[in-house]
Amino acid sequence: MKAFFLFAVAAAAIAGVWFLQAPIPQDDSYHRFADARTLFGIPHFYNITSNALLLVVALAGLFTSYRLDASHNHFHLRREFGLLFSAALLIALGSAWYHLQPSTAALVWDRLPMAVVFTTMLALVIAIYISRPLGKLLLWPLLFAGIGSVLYWYKTEQLGAGDLRFYALTQFLPVVLALLILILYHRAGKPNLLLGLTLFMYILAKAGEHFDSLIYHYTAIISGHSLKHLFAGLALLMWLLMLRRRHV
Image 1 (cartoon, rainbow, N blue to C red):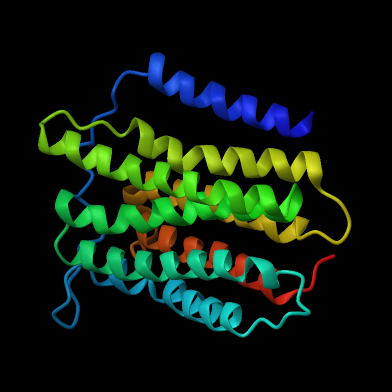
Image 2: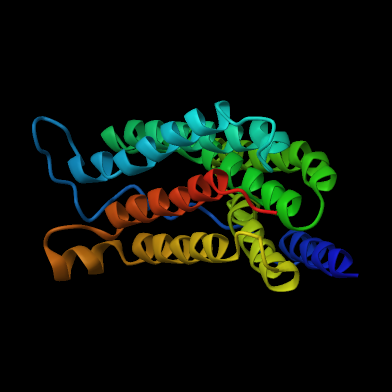
């Protein structure tokens, strides 16, 4: 019954985007960031280097997932965890590449791995909390949907009528469903606190992105977008801690 409720929420969200929500164009100001300082010859220096935490955690996660032994509870999900950390590594590299010279074409290489991270995260949450076979079964459809949402957005951009609806759904729906799963299925022995912190870090990352200029204006040190990257690294750190613990 709980699983049916979750799928009903997902279906309602997808139907709402398809039938009710008008196309969402890419904001013309998206590529203009508050902190555009050049240091050591590197443009947008802090927006690039703030990906370092994500990069380090992703590498640590890949190493950890590779070294899992058969006695570990997450051994049968090691490939899914490996995919999560591999995509996070590509986010760090793709984001750095994008911020060197922000453009819509470069943004694709930032958003593609992000779509993979969000959809893989949802599949892992389902596998850990509801059913391992169900999570593994849903992984590939979720991945194709996430990647397809980015390709759809970029194609509509090329046609002069950019539409971010499905990419936005790829970002927000996994987070909403993960939160519902945490509420409905939390129990002792599961990574409840770590998953909750992951979702909290995501909220802080989105807040940083939204208040990019305001944060930079008041701090004069760091921008909201750079904080977004740091919070993303902390969110991934929660997944690394999940992987290193032996949950029942």
